[in-house]
Image: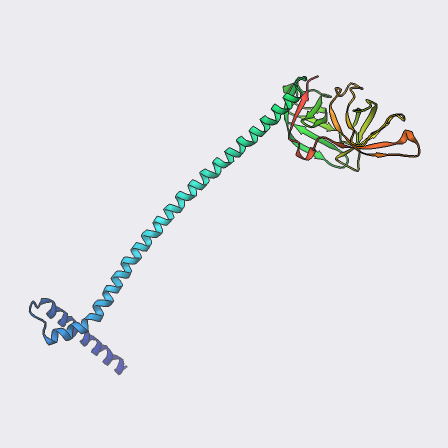
Length: 270
């Protein structure tokens, strides 16, 4: 305890002496004396310390000012980025609309001999037992049951049900579908049916015994039966399967329409 009190007393005395020296030297306008030089040497460390602290405080102030500026710049850049993202989305929407319009233009030009109603595919149900699509036009647009639906590559199917604003289409790849068709080379009539096994292939059946079936021959609608108009592209024969009984032979037909990429269609207003 005594030593601690003694240290405190000496500390107080030294502090008082330093303060007296500072006052004396600061009020003296004459030349520096020996005592002044000594005093300067004693005071200099304290002055340097005060200067360092002052500079640090000033530097911190600049730092905080820089932080605020960076935050403001970050907010500005974030806002610009949001605006750019919005613009890009609008451009993508316009691009999609332009592509759709080009599809419709190509379709209407190709099938200019038909009166048609354009539509977009809004749903696809391509399962093992049901292969249908839904389009965004319905009875309000003039769509009716049994109307033929086509795409740029050829026949899609026919309308099986209609609401005010939508229509459901049974595609030609549906296992329950049956299309009256003909061979492009011999004009022989056949029937193309959907299969459970394959979603991109039809089975051509009831081939006349005298008909010459050629791999690569194209298949079109025959117009028989009254459901589909004549001459619509269906697909291409990729394999002929011979059987012991010539009347049972059949062919596999690769369809022309890629249903995985199907987006735009035309409904033929018959």
